Image (cartoon, rainbow, N blue to C red):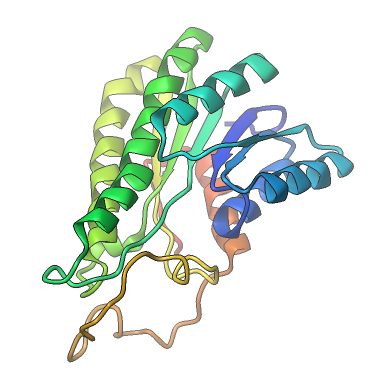
Length: 241
């Protein structure tokens, strides 16, 4: 897909990967719908992008609430007249071994990490069908390909998102609606600090998390470049290497 002048909605756009992605897509000429809970930060970002010549609108919303997700999709399509790309980036982790995990924390991140993107897909698919196609980019995680003690709940939500993405990809291919899964690695953001719960029991012995842990974290800007590459190349899956 050619990104210039395309309408791109990004959830979790106020910080981390979402913020870097918003700036990168704006630099590529996209029109941006910015979604996050932090209204002040979001409005400031919209003004920043406008000052650089981009067309951007701030849409403060909690994407764990299906009604608010429906609203931001409809508002974006009404504001710009179309919606070409949805990037489901907002997410949160929950710490805890399977024995200790707080089920309420799991429910909270499931609604954000799975129900939110599902609702966004269901809201935007009719719009994309009517306009002849579009692109849905779901931000997963490389931890879905691993087995790391203490973050099983987070990995489970992203694994559920992977299955939704894989299935939707096949279901929508004939309608020119492409669905892409992106797999960030450890990234230098506040994501870990914002995780719910407490990991009371430290895992013993080596794991796939500790093996190779000397590798530096990716920057949000690096991940944003990979997300842009995914949009441009339309590969089914986009990894960081």
